[in-house]
Image (cartoon, rainbow, N blue to C red; front, side, top):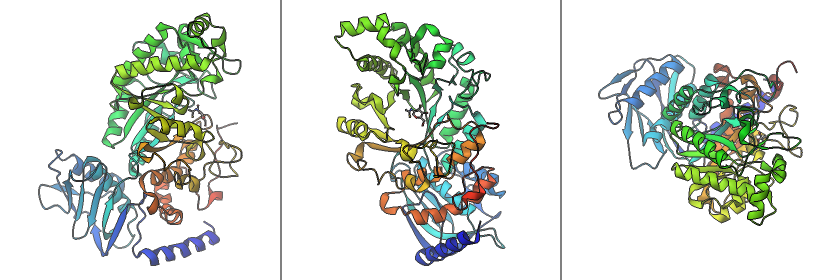
Length: 524
Ligand code: TNX
């Protein structure tokens, strides 16, 4: 780091310490922190009291994390442990309290206790180096989230990252109290989820990615999916699968041309056929297998950008007949017909349907549909969704698409009219968005979406994700009156060494020149 930035960081640190007495670097910022002005020494002598309400699961999780992260062995004891968990139904979902004083006590429901641990782990990671490495500040924290939906979406169709990378991302999500992993598993370049009834979806549809059309088939087996979902569940992360239809479906059509609805000159074979019964049956069969794999009871069916590649519908005899019979000349009506059919299937499976904001005018059931607002330049899509009464997840391109650049000077990510997705703009979301505070009860929360046309490997994936994931987390967790970018920025600096320890190549916002932007794909 250069001298100039050191000086400013030092000045800021002095200011913050004066203001707040004892510093903590927890992200997302807890709702309230009361300092008890003393220290707690955490070392090998510390014991954890076995949690009796869950067969010891949460106490064992803490023991394991402390051992894995810090090499400290803590013994589990039946009574009078130094660390005590209290299962407390009086706490609303995900909230917790953490008191570090003579001993350490965490109160909360299942998720709350888990988040209390994440806060404790961050405090430990930040503990002063000295004669005793883990000198924790004594304090009392009360904490609960602003939004119930705090997500990250990963696109594995454009590029496939594989199980280890997904597990790694899930661990970091948990560390930052993010709780929804939206898995974009199918799109035009490749189909990434094994479906037993239709093996060619992966064997043929899994071949290729956005840069290499002949890349050998890459996909998750159902066994791998179960493993990842179970892993996420232990981290209190819900996995929401996306099967994109009727557009973004070129990979399906490659495997089963019989289901194709054709495409456009620019996007050949882009759509599934919107009218054929066989297509609806095929998709419903696919969704049944998906439902059986994912306990979330939610299925995202995409529904985006159909107009990119539905030109062939205009001359398809079945579509033309349907349009005549239904007295319409609009392909949007055809699209809506398809969506409603699939909504029936999804409801029939007792799942909630999730869709991108293009589905907002399709007349899908208000009480069983969640709309994702992504077109930041189309506020009308958000207001229509809210006015109609739909619950909404906020993920506008700007600032929540992590395939967008994080700095003006970056060259390989996206920009939109010169705008991009820098840390600060993410942090200030959604307060800065005009419509976000109307109908606030319908806004479930927000998520950062990692589209991967321009992200071809783990190296670049991490660069695009870190540290912005921390800003997404705080935007989702901290209530607006508890947010302050400068303080966040100061706390965040303590996280950089943790990324280094995790062998993550991150964008160093404190010293940008030290971490040049990785190219999109090696050798190009
Ligand atoms: C738009 S978001 C898309 C994706 C792209 C993304 C790139 C959405 C529903 N559609 O297919 O990957 O932009 O930023």
